[in-house]
Length: 109
Image 1 (spheres, rainbow, N blue to C red):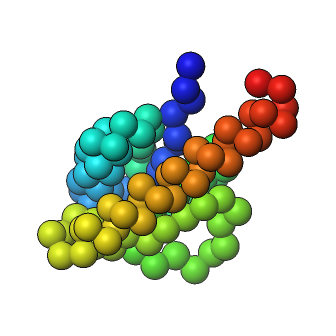
Image 2 (image 1 turned 135 degrees about the vertical axis):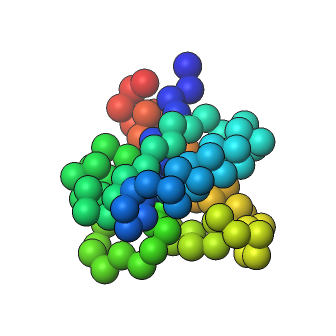
């Protein structure tokens, strides 16, 4: 059984903007048949929540270094630049999934 990607979207307050972004990301990934669980949080909660995620999507600039893949997607909730963000999102997810498959093979799964 395929394991879903765990994605978290962070914005300043973790409310309206990130909720809209969750819906958009989930829809884009569903269209590409990429299994994912997408959640959201405030920037202040990101460090502790990011530890269990495969990908962090930032809606605003973030000055701390993350140890997992991340991308900034400030244009995600507008119509301008959405195609570029979509391509980057899909490419990043496919790379992560490829790495997860390699890790599973190395661990005998």
